[in-house]
Image 1 (tube, rainbow, N blue to C red):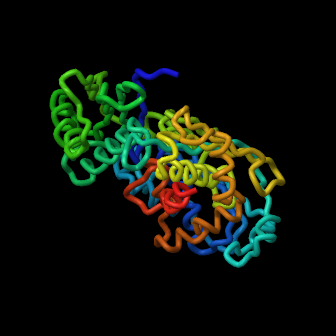
Image 2 (cartoon, rainbow, N blue to C red):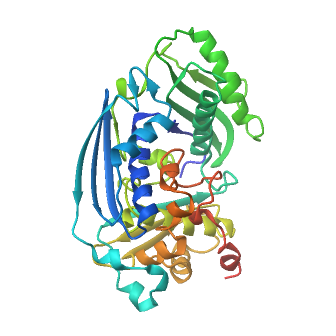
Image 3 (tube, rainbow, N blue to C red):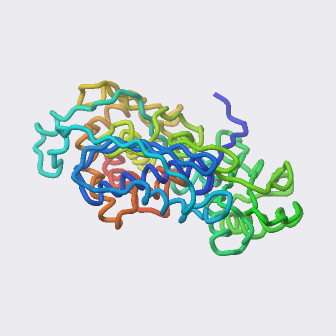
Length: 397
């Protein structure tokens, strides 16, 4: 196992075409669940020059104008300009109402333990949750900082600190590790685009990004860029346009951005655009919950929880833990510990986190907010799978 290395993760702003599609897909999920918590829905998007395509399959009593939802997300993302905007872009839809699903009649809040056990998953897959001691949020430092920079770009644009920015941008942070611990900022990369009709020189862009984006992020952090940190701000020069008019976007194409920035493994399944009765979404949240509580309990410096489900099962067919030789217990014992203390059945996860009713609780805007800046490790949102409420019990094992 390497002890000294450099690791880099990237993030994207809310106006990046892939993130735009993720937000539209999750906004549609929010709208269905806000009206009908029992709704089953799957929504996917593709966007390109002046065109957005939405495919949605649903079983619900709700009435949702998906095109209107999409236009609102596009506008809120900042696309109100000639090259792409919420008013004039063409929206094509493929909508299909599915026959009533058996889970439409399920209220997991009132089910007995035996009834919870009879609710089986209808997807198969392996899902990962990870936590480590690198940051207060128990996330890897590269992805945490990349997300902060993406948020800072969006904030600088929205507050008119850099008024010429378009909504599309990307960030990248490289961390130098020594003895597997973050030691210094190796590199910082920021790529932004300008609105059409503007032509600010590269030197001004670099100065503005340093002052309004990078410096605020690192101001109160213990680890800061130093004189040897490599700084890349639009390294190919001035970029005049971004967004769907330049490059296309798809739902579910930024899985590493949504999770751990590739520092840990992640599922190949998209997280956005799915109602909570999809194990390929909520299994990721349950795995993160278990991993974070194990690390918070000081049982390991870092921990990856792996859950594997097969179609027709209620429990995962495999639960694995890897503490990378940092655990106070053997990994097999850690796996047994979480199996005893965490309920990984689909309906139990939905019940534990109240996942069907969070959109209504958050005024119709819960899952859409997860679709940018990550589904895990968030400190700006009160996510139920980010709680460490079982850490004290695990520590006292």
